[in-house]
Length: 228
Image 1 (cartoon, rainbow, N blue to C red):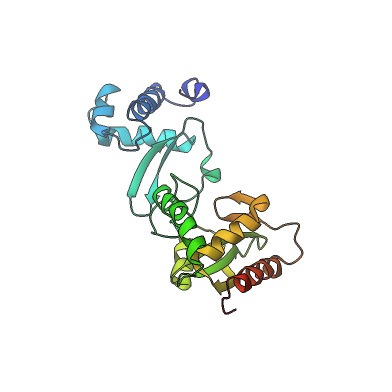
Image 2: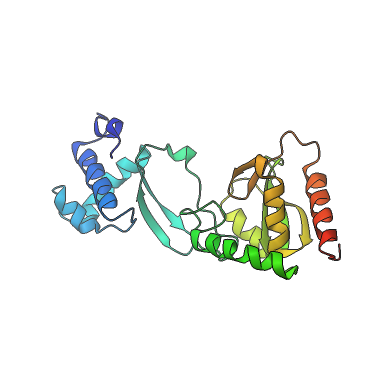
């Protein structure tokens, strides 16, 4: 399905509107793939080649129905939005906590393959009663200290640098603890009602988010006979 508003947008050139329809159809036929043969698309809409298509793509990008930007591990990716998303509202690619690759196809911060791996680890983690060697962390942006991401990483400083790439506001480390995936999973479940998306949680109504996270972690780690 295409966005009727875009197709009827008199501010776009006829070629841009036709290109949007062709790109959308191509993406749907290819089951959501973001890989396009731009030379072929250009010929379909009556242009010589992909170079001639670039100004047309710029038109579509400006109204938010085409997104062309860098994605972690994938390079420059062209994607089509079925509804216009103003460029100012488009979110940057966020690397996966586990593998560092693009997580846009899954929950922000956890790509789909790693999400499946995590799910498979839950029974094992519960049955072995053992922590892995990674650290659990809580971070926020400097601009919004009560919107907090709870994640896990082997190297927190490296992870902070990765997260900073996708944030206009400085990323601040609020809390960290040993405990690995079992602790992270517990905290996600503990604060599930506060979940915004993925690993981000809304603590706006909590007086001291770090204290709340720390208390939940301490209780969990004591149950696991972990050093805290």
